[in-house]
Amino acid sequence: MNGHRLDLRSRVALAFAAFGAMVGLLMALSLMLATHDLGLRLIDETLNAELDDFFARRERNPHSLPPRTVTLHGYVRGPESNPAELPHYLATLTPGRHDLIIGELSYRVAVADRKESRYYFLYDASLQQKREQRFIILIAISILVIVLISAVGGFWLVGLVIAPVTELARRVKHRQPDVWALRLADDFSHDEVGELAHAFDLHLARIRAFMERERAFTADLSHELRTSLAVILGAVEILLIDETLSEKQKSRVARVERAARDMAEMGSALLLMAREERSWSLEEQACVAEVITEAVEKHRFLLKNKPIRITLQTDPTLHLTADRGLLFIALANLIRNAFAYTDQGTIDIVQDGSSVLIRDSGRGLRARHTDTLLPRHLSNHEGSGIGLTLVKRICDRYGWSLELTGQEEIGTTALIRFSAA
Image (cartoon, rainbow, N blue to C red; front, side, top):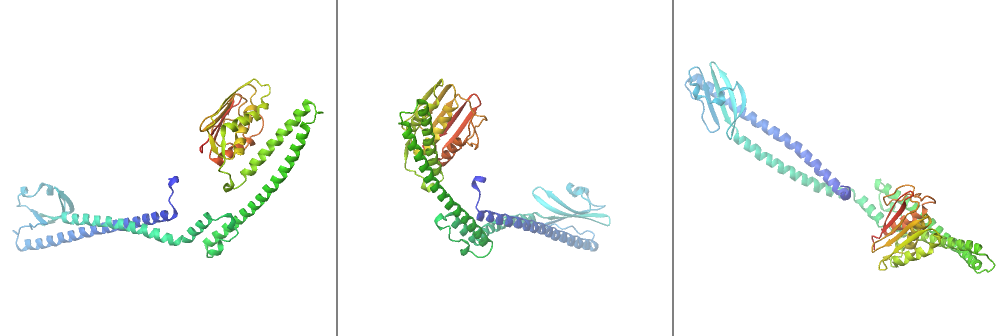
């Protein structure tokens, strides 16, 4: 029941109820055994008293008849008595005490020998058994009441005991980063809860310091990276319009330009991924078909003169609430891998109303991978898998699922399902 785990108060209340049930059950068993034993003792004492009284009357009058009442029946088997008068169920009984059931009635039987006669006294114990049954019902009701009282009392008592812990959990849960500098431990007593609050204060202070360093680092990195890339792209533009460069040199410069622009896009994506969730832009609508077409055209140079047939099917009606730059990076990474690691054959790019499928007949993956957990260094036949890790992070950010399957020298299939489509 991991998906429906009870809270602390409910667990303690159940523990109290179970403890109350166990104690009540032990007490009930003890009372039932004691009551049953006491009833047998009283019946046996009654039988002893009736036997002694009958023996005394027989001494005075040998022809005295045994008792015949509602609860007590007596029989005598002597040398002169008729054996047919003795019930057959008594004939086999030996001297002592016996429990006998006759039809729906239950009897306690006392058998005793006196001189040459054997005496049988039967006490009707049915009423005693009915009283014991009523007592059992009363005990069962008492146990239920004890369990209920224990559960309610445990729920109420644990509420008082863990109130400081509950308050601390509430404050930690709803605590915003802008008030992390305020100490939690100042509002709690100097006990175990206070120590826990102090530990939270230390961890929150470390997290706050880390966030400040990260914010400063991303700001400085963004400024320095953009400045350097702007200088590189400016120099590349000047070189590309230089008529003195040969075609081979211009091709190399164009390669530098593409690398610089890819670096700029990657840097922007990484900086955006480093921001907190509340700063994400969730209002932008990105057309998936347009992003796919743009990514295909941008990386078409990787195909060069390869004998590859590309099949492109898109649905322009699919728009996602996501940052267009991150969507482009995710799809462009998968498309670039398909273009770069396929030497011949086919590349199919199919986008419908809820997913994008990119399938190639290239070099495939070094290891089969059928789930959505991409290891950091999963790679194609060549190159590293850092781009795939970034794709996975982008998918996780928006709640999309990424499935990557393939086999070496056979091909790779990448599937993104847009759960928020």
